[in-house]
Image (cartoon, rainbow, N blue to C red; front, side):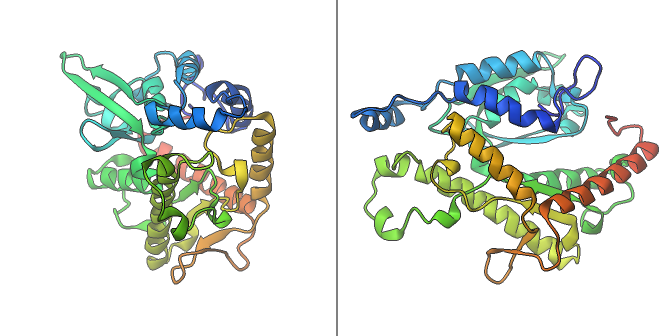
Length: 333
């Protein structure tokens, strides 16, 4: 939604609008169930028979904000992962693909709803796209996080693919010239240091416990966290191996606990706490995966996350100016 244009072809939202948007709409997207003696039983039954939320308010807000804006209308190039449950394979929506086929030019509202449709929480989303020749492409989609919960690798792959196709936006970069890549990967937080599960506990679980355990969905957490961590590890290995460590920036809060690490607890108190955690994260030391232990560790003399973001922002602004002067295909902001 940050890349959708307004009536003046400027960004519909700025980064500063993200927090107010979530504070306003999250409580309605994820209405909290009433507490009571039988609430846990009711929640468990709901988790078994259908998604926890109907997604209606989410759909309404997204469609209201984005209207008929399509992927090709974005003011900068984007790549958004989803997963097609009919084909059992990822569907990657890329601005570059819309230049080659109108069948990929879906409405942004459909893409946003699809990539947020987390299994057990929100319903899968169906839509179809028709090109000018009447060819129809159907989509049966759920959250792209099941395939790429950390989409950084998808973004790197998409750029590499465009380089192979001699896209003038990236001339004269080579596909493996990671010295010319700048990657910022911002996570949504995890509770991995809480250690809330263990083998002896999980050894006794059946289907119900894997899907519903003390307000969490362990199987979803496991899939999503493993996907995100493997991408971070892979990117760290590649960038370090090619002596381009400083070109890859991963910012993630791994010390969430309790309701902070939940997907859907949208109470006023919890949302405000998450805002505070995000602000504090800026002042934490820049960290990187230790390839020997697999753990994230502070980088000696690496500065803070905020300082790293400022450095990257300056580099990206300068790079964009160079590309805009060189290629007529580069989207201007």
